[in-house]
Length: 328
Ligand code: DGY
Image (cartoon, rainbow, N blue to C red):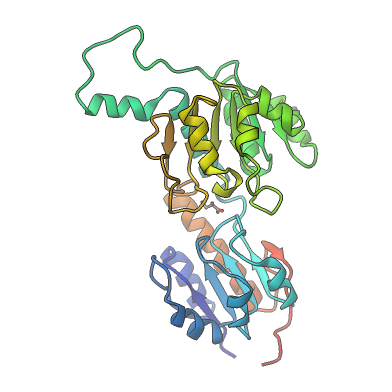
């Protein structure tokens, strides 16, 4: 029996080749801007597999259009775009792409921390605008990282990789996580703290928790007011962990010093006022955007689909599905 997989949007060729070599029929890929509703309906009705982007909303209604679906392979580590409960009820596997994007995302996080601390984007603009008139003792003064405290909100793979980098810059590490991380404590001297002291003691607060009902809007006005006025907020996780309108206000009135954001609350839309702030460094969700990492993510997603097509358990299941196919 043919196993059809809808590929919702473009992915690296290596993944498509792998799917075809395994004998799967590939429907798509759809366009980068997103498939029309009619194409979703048509393709999902015929598909056993779905390989999708993090910007595809795979909710209960969409899953209901897919009577033969057995696996949703997200081309991302975060799976907040997928209704996992509805998938589980239908016996559909949900998989993600952990590990392979850890180092790339940690690199970008450090880049944002440095860009904020040393005002790199402002500096670039200053030079390009022809305003550089020679060295000055007070020109674009920033803050140095050595001796400062990095606070990690969430200390999984990416948070830990950021901690390793920050420790090499001489930063002290605090973290807030559901369970102690003995590795992090041993290798980076990290200390686990409750949420309020994480906010008040960090010079740089970096967000690395998944988006869930508990973390949505976790950093809002009150939390920003608990942070140091000199502090930097960095988010390479999910935008909706932060109430962006509150952040804009905090950056504008000096409640905190700067923010480095790779993700946005309602991306690709930005909150009013964000773009005009000189103390915000903005990137278009490129944490995992290296050639190597994107290839590895796509191949992993394809392998997860192939495993399910063979009646095997996929390596990166976040929701367990049924091992055998549902009756047709
Ligand atoms: C993910 O995989 O969840 C990242 O946000 C993609 O860069």
